[in-house]
Amino acid sequence: MTAIGRFAAGALLLLLPIVMPALPLTAANGQVPAGKWAVLTFDPAETSLSFSLTGWPHDTHGTFKLKRGLIRVDPASGKMDGSIIADAASGSSGVSLRDARMRSSILDTARFPDIAFAPRQVISHGNPPGEFPVKVRGIMTLHGVQHEFAIDAQIHRDANRVRIESDFVIPYVEWGLENPSILMFTVSKNVDLHVTSVAHLSWVDAPASALHAGSPAAIAR
Image 1 (tube, rainbow, N blue to C red):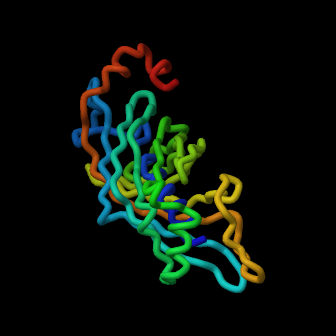
Image 2: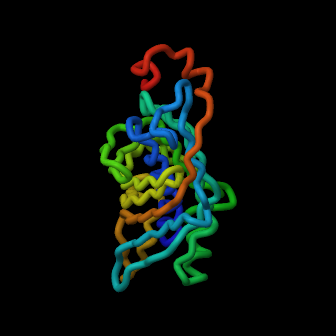
């Protein structure tokens, strides 16, 4: 069960890409570089992935570790690519027996070692200086199965340092994972996730596919 939360927590990593809203992204001089995409490189050492699974007679809390994350965003259209990857085997709830069961029988980390989120499009964003909300649409992969998913996050940018915070819910049972409830011990069919991460902002040339896609509207499709 805890593992469920972790892989979900790993999923929550994906939310980090939200940090790339279209309009608020500018270079240090306040301008959007022509023909450039913004790049967010996430720092595993400054990333916290935690989960909470409501249950009876007690709730389960734990953490997950980020393997790596790199997201590219077109500031003009909000189109995104890249991925954020969490280590499915790193989940820890503080109970070794429970964690081992979750890794082997629920997450099957030997076959599915990664939990990934691939952002595809910025849906909406605020535009206040320094801090703003964002919503991103993408694909979350858990236990080898892809799910369309949208995540809300709060972004705080200080020059090229970007901090992202997000809370969201993963319906793991609905997505086909085992419900760990046993006899009198019951848990929710959803796991609550909280993610905090820091990423470094840089700029690269727009990919050829985007340069030949035509208008910003075409790029956003």
